Image (cartoon, rainbow, N blue to C red):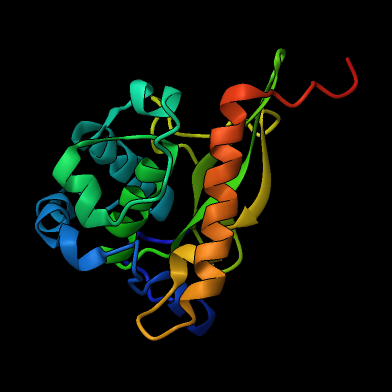
Length: 193
């Protein structure tokens, strides 16, 4: 694990830029306040501190989840509401990390339980030259119990830049949103039990 402010590699640049949804410039005031607390920490420790900050800012919106309100929001929209679902926690965390120069990305997958599986979003942070570390930005403890989380994809639609094809991003995010709404009504059966 490298220091939180270690130089990044060229291939990490995509995961440091802002996008339509992930807006690092909108959280600069938050990261300016967080930066002194990160002195002497490595990237994983810094990521845990970023997750704690995310949890202080957002409250989980269980009612929104139950009503199927899972469409992705921009960082600015998330900060205006101060509530959200897993996608919102992941987008805000990613904006905070990128504002600090730490490569981060949103992951879509399944959260497995003894009752089945539900669609879920979490983040990965690049903690050294080769390792992407999964983190749960909305739960205490922050480290994923690896057997409970099954990644399906990096949500590249969240990386859409101004001028990029909006259609492919909207299709990917619509599929994700429909999957999240669908998870309200049907659960994926547990495999092997």
